[in-house]
Image 1 (cartoon, rainbow, N blue to C red):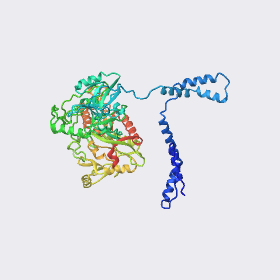
Image 2: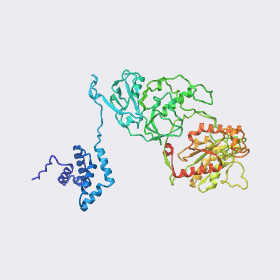
Image 3: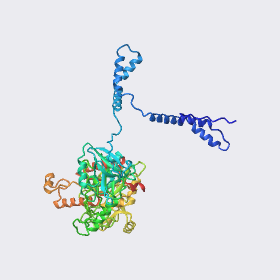
Image 4: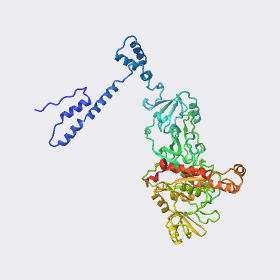
Length: 610
């Protein structure tokens, strides 16, 4: 006869069920391995412990635990006084010591505070006069406490239905953290006052007059917005942005201002026109609106077409006041005073003076070991400005140099008067074992004291022309009928020796060097220039100092050179070094080079994918 299978009682726990299943497993000729596996799994002590923990938690949950008492501190004091009234045993002395210790007294005080507090949400009473066409489940009453922090939500009026709806929720804001308001929700009432037929300015006044708390009557959206995890997309801003100057923004109060070079964490790209982002390192956890890459490029292209974006090939035209409503987004923002504005003017991509972008011809006057008067050639790239690349954002990631990798390339660019070759040579001479220069090529004859591959690589004109034709130089030029150039292989040769290669190039060569192979760190060196000749005379003696022998015209040219480089190439620069004098500039450059080997830096994400 077969043994009868035990019957579980109604109160049997999971661990008891597991034990019973284990005892009922019998070897089977056809499934012997499976049975052995199951028995081993069910017999695991850790699994049994997990089942017991699960049961205890479920039992605790069903009991709906509440504090046993709300005055544990007073009870402890009473017990301590009672113990001291007579002789005490060893255990009583130990108990008295525990009850009078400051740590336990603090814990009991916290217990009483928590026990006396009601953590259930305090909701306002439901209105008695719900609209007849709405059932009880379709209406949501939301009560939010008013403080100085913006709610982080915008509203707009639906053109088709005329209702006021929540347009977007700013990530990290109060509305987002509450989880009570979602995109698409319809706003019906504010503090019991209907907003269905109210004008935007009336809604604004109603919200601004709210004190203490605000109660919203909302019709939830059919599909509530998923609470997505914040993305880890980081962008380097390549332009300055001021929301208050951008007429195309859906809500200026919700905009996030930033400067060129700021690192932005883009937390959502759900809206193809307006992203939500935070500035990295900013203490404000609430995201703000920034123009998306596609939208920014589109309106810059529109401005270029309309002639409102300056171009050296065409004269400047005044900014157009005419607009297209295609990219207008009429929204209001719950700011610190709950002011909501839905007023809108027709706004086109051309609207909004986000930043000025000037183009200048390449070939700025600086030396490639050439004098300003005698230089005839420039870089290996065409000096003519081609089609503009609209500067918006560059996706970046954190990078830290590892000892197993080749050192990063250090690129110096400088405006007139920076003397970056002198700065480079001085730093290398101080530590030739760590830093080196890429030896350039030349077609000039070798001098008696020179060695091939030390001062220069001496090559024939035919070989130089062939290398230039094969695009082997990052830049090259002609000086007194001799060719000079810096090759890519010269840089690789220095890095192969595990030395940090320092090159000074014309700014036009930066695009050629910005690759994952070199991971260049670009330093823009510019001299500190007095604002006027009078100030310069007071600051330096005649004929002395860095700029003592320069005329006011020379100084103005140096200023203009710095401005031009910053306008055209500043977005490619990692660090600006203001050169007061050679000694201080050299010390600052040494510090930068040392940090490159130990600190982490933001680099283009594309460099890490190559």
